[in-house]
Amino acid sequence: MHPVLFRVGPFEAHSYFVLMYAGYLVGLGFARRTAPYFTAAAESEDGEALPGPAEAVSDTQGSGSARPFFRIGNRVTKRAISGAQVSEAAWSSLLPFVLGGRLMYCALNLPALRADPMEILRVWHGGFSLVGGVAGAALYAYTYCRRKGVSPAELTDAFAPGVTLGGAIGRLGCLLGGCCYGVPCDLPWAVSFGAHGQGGEWTPPCHPTQLYESLADLIILSVLCVYRPPRRLPGEIGLLWMILYAAARLLIEPFRSGATSPVLVAGLTFPQIVCFALLPIALWSLIRLRLPAGSRRAQNQAIAPPA
Image (cartoon, rainbow, N blue to C red; front, side, top):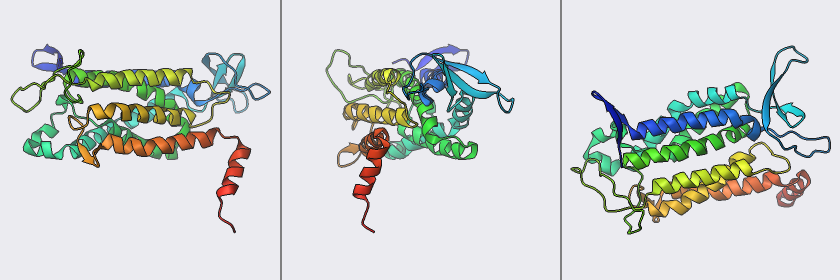
């Protein structure tokens, strides 16, 4: 635990802020660079996707104005989401992301915050709900898509890898800042954390669940990068990310339950409730997306009520 990275006079650079912001910038840069790869698929004449690195190119045929295209191998196809759109959507949704994450954290920790309401303002102590942050950003991003005529599914595909990489870095800020740790354990890698607002007391050795989630994010990112279906469909990468993240969070959350993740109902924490609901919905949506069009029509006719 190292809550302050460095000091310059009275100024303190808090680990939580620095690494969260670093994760945001790195994730945004990664999303900008990889948006062509994750949001469009070039096809050969027989309908097969072509392998190869994506390369941004311009096409001025027709109207004379440049349009966003990208190259895979020797073929050029229209790019669904441009890097400029990724940047615009990311920066405009930053405030909803921050507010959503902080407000959700405060709502889930009201009993502890009642004893010291000023702790709500001490954001450098950590305390951020990733689920709330993503929900806030997603709500704003939907309005952005409506205004700009962008496909929400394709925007999700563009952001999913960057969000995953940024989350892996941001969780290191949680580790150094001393928040989001797990329940006590006697494992060799257990870590003690300072308890803010408790007279400088330290926790017993605990599960470093921040590291668990950071590692899970890197594994998820690797899967997204190597996932190469014969033909990538809009929304497919985003749904795969939701499935993998929900599954990983459900595996990690029991190590946090009751420590830094309050139990709400039926022994479940808020992230567990969300992920238990999200996982089957995303899995079913991905299966239906990958079904051939004929199979989807037959399935819809089979479940349709009689006229």
